[in-house]
Length: 379
Ligand code: NDP
Ligand code: MG
Image (cartoon, rainbow, N blue to C red; front, top):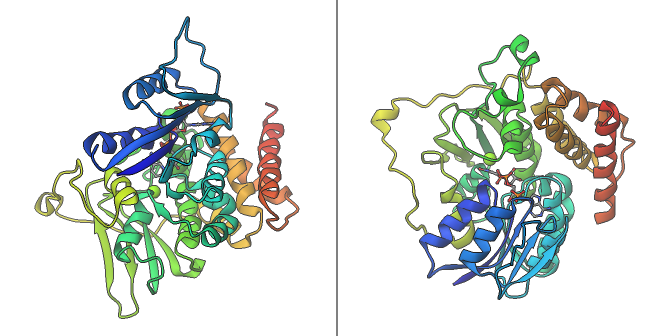
């Protein structure tokens, strides 16, 4: 029985983690839950799973609401660290944005294995996260589907030798948009992902291809490799979730219809492969799988954010902090699609650099980027 601390329980990934727990109650249980603002869903989850600890990023405001008994509660923006309790065997980090790095570092410091959905944590602090995990003997297992595919192709061996990682990308909501169409693209357009149903922020990241740039940085840290060994290919069908090429020229790909439950189950219970809620692939019906190079002309952020990753130090944290804030403003209808790129590039250009020097340097870089974007748009 694996006891799970679930940080980000009411989101797209969080709910799918709970589906896996419901399906395999003899293998998994939930000892703590953390949510953000969705009080209604949070209370339903607490009632159903009866965790030892539950946290919400705000104080609950339901009228005359009596919180289910038998659970200890904490409230506040960073209250989620209270959910990383000694009773947990593994911490699923599936909250969105910068705060993921706080959860991941706290989990590692407490000696807990991490099942990681929040890629932002490795973008922001991959250097210290992976070093600390090594020092504490903690394992980080990937939930992101591409990184799970790579892990599966490596036979779950993080140290296996390979020559290349090839990350696949659907191309996101704007893959067929011209440059002119992108200029007037709206939030509603950006939220129409062709193949995956996910939270709003990552869906916008997919539309800008920032998500894929983040995944390149994530792969660099998870697989302890260099940027020149990580490629990206557009694969519209999202059937191959990523590939690994070996020295003899063999390429191993992992395939399935799009489903996050496969990576979630593996991150929690590998190497066992349990039945997931996914249909068998029908190759005859698929007929063909297609591939093409990403179009950097239309999606320059793919290159620019990877370049920030290559510059290293605090630059990726600045790119992430600017993106977090810009996407939030875009989703609120306060800025345009093109402003996301202006935010990230502007923040990177005006940042004076610096090495990662502990967690506080990440906080400073994130705050700098958040403020830069807010000032730029006067919000
Ligand atoms: P969602 O927006 O659907 O969910 C985010 C979750 O984070 C919600 O449960 C939200 O709570 C919670 N949250 C936000 N702030 C806090 C806080 N301060 N304390 C506790 N919980 C908080 O996002 P997704 O599930 O789509 O994505 C989550 C992460 O996983 C992202 O980093 C994303 O990049 C990554 N990922 C997602 C994939 C997907 O298929 N969705 C695929 C691969 C990676 P509430 O709803 O209550 O406000
Ligand atoms: Mg992914």
